[in-house]
Each structure stands twice: as C-alpha cells, then as structure tokens.
Length: 248
Image (cartoon, rainbow, N blue to C red; front, side, top):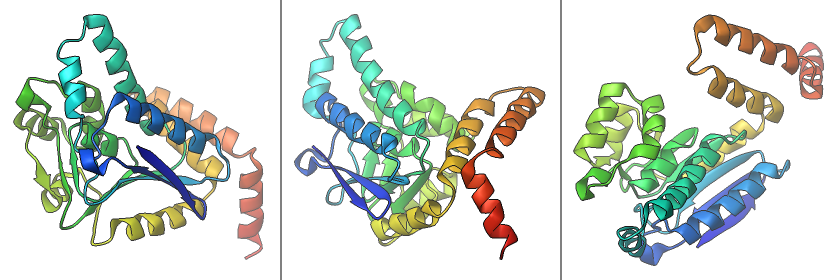
C-alpha cells in the first residue's frame, strides 16, 4: 500500500493504492508511519518526498473505512482519530525537509497530509486540492491547525466551510500550494537536492525552533531562539562550515 525508495539522499514515499484512488485506510496509515519513521531515523536520508501512484495523490478516506466508522463507538473513534493525528503530527514534526509532490487530486485527508509538509509542489494540469469533509457531516478538525499556518484565518474558514476543491492555479493563489510544475517529481527531486546540500543539523534545529516559538510572546520567543543559536555554534557542522567559508 505504501512504497519507499531512495534517490541519492532523498526518500520517496509513494501512496500505492491506485485502484482505491490512494485513499487512506488504517492499514495504509500504519504502513506509512512505519516507513516514514524509518526515514526519520536514518541519518543517510536528508529529505523526504511524499507522492501518489498514477495521477492521484490521495482521495482522502477509503469508502470501506467510512462505512466502518459510521457505526464506531466513541472509544473506537477516539483510537482511530488518534491514528490520523499521529499521521499528521509525524509529518509536521519531522526534522527533515518534507515535500509533497501532488501529482493529482489531494482531497480531505489527502490534502491534510500534503499540508503537513514543508513544501507543496502541485501538478499544473492535474492537481486538485481541498477539504471536502463538511459535505458528509464530518469535520476537518485535525488538519485545521495546519491550514491556519499556511493561509489567513478567514481564508481557512472559507476553504473549510465551503468544501471547495481548488485547481492548482487557485491553490497557488491562496497560498495552499508553493510551486506549480509540469513534472512534480522532477521538481521535487531538484528541490530536495538543493536542500540536501544544507546542514542537516541546522535544518533540524531550525524546524524545531519554528515549531517552538510559533505561538510564544515575542520576548519568550527571542529567549528560546537565543538558546538555539548558542547550541548551533557548538556543532561540528557549524565549525566545518565556518572553516570552509573562511578558506574560500
């Protein structure tokens, strides 16, 4: 259901249920998390690309799965919702650059998965993005905090309550997408290659810093940032980087 391959220093994780429109299911989420966490722990991997098989990124939740949760108990729903939360938080909390190569429709949970990445590259012709949950009386609750980090509050409101599905140009215009491309994998790999040349430790600390200070008072944020700055000066990568810079 999920495939992993490595190209140079980049892991490519592919959602591979094309016959089900790469829809997310509990088994698929579990498999994805296992592979993603293995990439996170592997120091040889510098960046992670997430994409889908064929011309679909992910159509959201599997229909059979939706039929199951219809009759779930509160406890079952809590456990299930926890898995979705784990999926989104694991990708968002990665210390490596993450890139969503959105090769086609990314709907509901599929759009949420893409939104958890640092970069979203969308296929100019085929990509469609949106949160369709309210159409079936569901709530796009778990991904809402991520959307609010990408777009303004009122734009997030509009996208979530309208369930509007955006084409690539509209998604770019509202800030949901970062880059449009006619070849999303080539674009994603080129971006990953650029990012891989930067200090892995610096990227890790930068991402941790941003997550930490995001909602702090500005004075507290500066104090935390200062601590990260001090720590970064003690790393071997920093010392080697300074040496290379001074000997240019």
